[in-house]
Image (tube, rainbow, N blue to C red; front, side, top):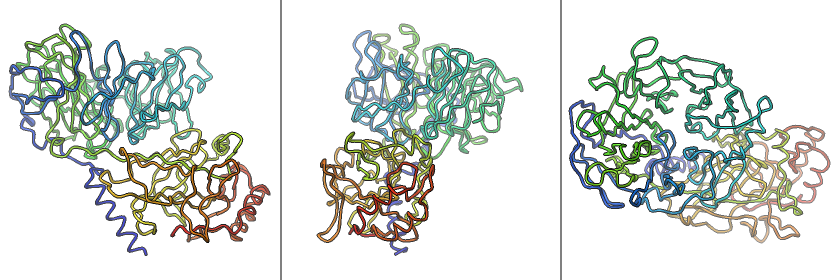
Length: 638
């Protein structure tokens, strides 16, 4: 049994690697200008037609035009520090001046729709979830509500009202004037109240912490990828809100938070003057937020020119597990692309002692007619294989309009990412369901009893996933498995999810199925004190999403066993009473469950398996629930 289980998991790992999940790629492969400080002057090149490509004459890379702005129109990236693509690069967002945010297909770049139902506090304050490709977040303009938004269903969920979090400051709530992304687990955001105080909020735990700042300077400390370190005006603050490091920076300039090659949180910035401790001047300086040390990525000490004006950095290649990659765009001084880094785009890897800089194209935007809108604001994709930028395209078309373009690196052309499979699964728990409202109770959450991490990392499940609490309106955790057949040995993936009050499951780690999955799968849902359920048939992936609603029909069963319980109001739900414990799954509601209840009877304000109605209290009401289902069992193979 164990050998077969390990074999199945090994096959899954191989599938995931083939599908690009373990994405560790040297982005310099196939590029010709690497750690080269020679001049490669910009050459005349006609603007490509919409969705067509050109080959950059100086660097040999492919550049594709992905928007079609009218004369005088402006379509640009949101900003270098804000991710344009979603987690699996199947979607992307750009901004059209005067109209709003445009949702595009992330692979074909075709226009899908305007995000007119979003009203973010600032055009650049839209944050894609780092794992769930359907989810983004934003602060609602005028309301102080921090919103979780599903681009597929257009459903908005208020995660928290930031004004309600703070009691020691009244006035205007803002995320600051130097906004970066959320932490890379999509759990931590930062904000300020007026110009008086600044805070961070951890969604999974509901913890809000004030920073110990003497001068907010209209900017909240921004979270690094780990969510435990924060950058604010040349300083680093820790998770207690206290100063932990003073970086060797003369002043705050254009910058982006990301990771070094060793995985440490980093602040990447241009520096026009050396730091207080000397050195660290250049177009890109890497500051280790853990140690406070800095080293140059692009600087005069490496043979480059004095730092270029208009340098913007994007260090958001979070899906490439070869950490440290970033992109940058430079305006320069001559604005004719004639000298080193003038009007250039680069990618680079910040590995101290082994820095790699690749020059990948001229952006051909001189800013003359459009000022700020004419700045390229390069944005690297999650895998690092593409770089988005804006340009009014120097040459005969100079200044006619500003459009978006993408450098498609050889690493993308040779191995484009495959869109990951989304999950849309719903189920009801009998114990917490109220037919009168059509909702389940989230009492465990409101009493702060809900486990902050998935609870199935013990017998009989032994699922070792690292999912953490990262949503609201949660009823409880469920464990969802996927099988290519009905037997347990055909399982190919598992993930823990947070059951919402309406019955739909939010998956902190949704992307568990191989993106090249071509066979239908059975979906199995387990809960710590309800009877297991499995789909009666294998389910196909449709439109890159696996969808099933257990609420509308009975699940897998035989003539002598049970699937789900149908309520008088018509809904189907999991039977309450199977209090799983011990080393083996029972899939049976019997006297052993009553015995488990008896040992916990009278306990309260705790997260207990015997709490069948999920209200934090084990008492006779739970026994009554067990009694109504005693003798029910499932034929789902264990």
